[in-house]
Image (cartoon, rainbow, N blue to C red):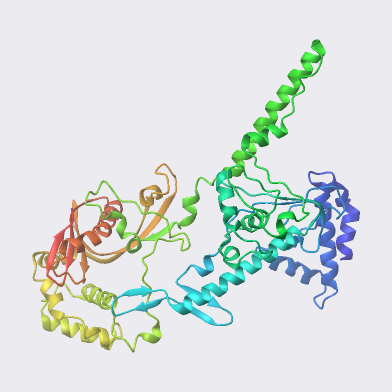
Length: 528
């Protein structure tokens, strides 16, 4: 503490920063730093080393000390703060902005609602019929939470309305004046002092609450609607006005051109100067409006990460035309960052109490296919023997093995492609991981094709045969096919296109044939 103040004095650092831009704030920050050191010395962690470690920890956590204010409570200035921050304060004139902003009700619009008192209310899922219904507990908890939310918004509104000592301005926006009057006129048939419950509960912003309350007063006289004044509120001595302002009105209020000067040389110069000043104000107004309405041009890029897995974006390439790739929309994906399929791995504690999923069986079959010795005869018995060995080694769970059909695997190697893989065993590569860069604009329709952003695509190729001048690519699938071969092909076409492009980039060779190997039907389909 003493060291800091000595440095300030010896270097005249306070005087130096006081002469810089925002000097007043800089000096206040240095004083706040000294006061923070003084408080630190009052604790058990004393000394310069401990204080430096304290500052380093703050930096590691990307935090900072609170910035001190540089003006007093009675200083002539405009203060901008939240409603919560204004509690206990009063000001001569108060502007409450954005009164027509809708209340945030996301917490009650999902498939489940949490309540501190009653727990959780979820939708009802009919597993047998694969249907989903809104449940009574969810509706009840949502209603309770909505009432609590609106009650809190009313408390905030009360705080905002009671901060002004002389004048209070409530500012909001409506598409048209007629739309506002129609919204407020919903209370026209009510004469009670307290607004009816259904109107209070169905309001979605603070301006509607205020408008419904004011509409019953005799000062409200919309030209477009006929209304009656009922009850005590109609003659309440409150003084207020409702006014509407368009862009042109706002600009007109801030433009002042002096044209009453005498038309001599000096007067002419005076008028011209005012006109130039008005034009400058107009330009400033337009710039300010443009800045407030500006949206971040790369907003879509913030909704995804620079890493994507092939399995997660496989729908991207479902178009049969290789040159015309489909594009994914980021709508509804902004919370995840990555475009992902809505499947989650089963928790470990469920592994022993449920039958393995089709995905787990498919993974096991892929593993077996990668372990097959291509240089020896492949039969049902050799496959079964190898599977038992994998189980003994702990590579595959025993309950999964029961669903692996050895004849499916041996049957593949009896096909023309299977025989070719065995014949060219020395040229075969299996389970090959890869990464490749793709233009983000080619993947997501929300991102411009001219964008310089690239995405890193990762995947694993089941296998390929590499000849001197070309490559044959193959990928195994264990899906149930039935009579929906075309549907399966379309499902994985995108994956195969990505694999093919990646392989051609890596090997600098043309992939002449791309096979989708449907193991359950012993079909090897060429993907064009």
